[in-house]
Image 1 (cartoon, rainbow, N blue to C red):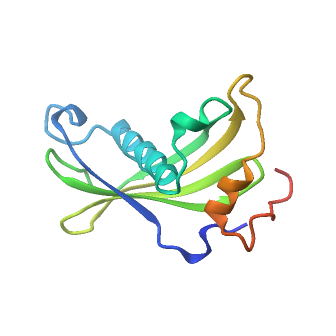
Image 2 (image 1 turned 90 degrees about the horizontal axis):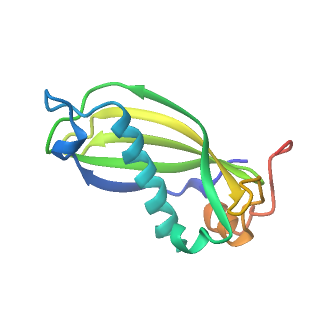
Length: 149
């Protein structure tokens, strides 16, 4: 099911530090994944769910990821990292994410991430808590799930 009911994608601001770059001052490719992970975490926090509070009962783990790199970010660039839920299933979320340079909105990297909800004690799949489903999808369609999940 389509999630977020037309809400604007959440955007997290961050800066490129020396530790994020290679010897040429260009962001090392894997660090875009870190920026996107932080944006997903901040999206949860923005909805009122801190991962530290959820960790006793459940965790979100990346099941699969896809990234496309367009233009490199450089040392000191300010970045805008979006985190939009495009699919909400019984035990997983699919995020579409983009990393843009803040000064000119140039698309640097984009990707999709399938994130599974698992039990903290066994790491076995579990349903996403209803309150979190409602926060992502809105009360009008929170009870709907995609077939097969």
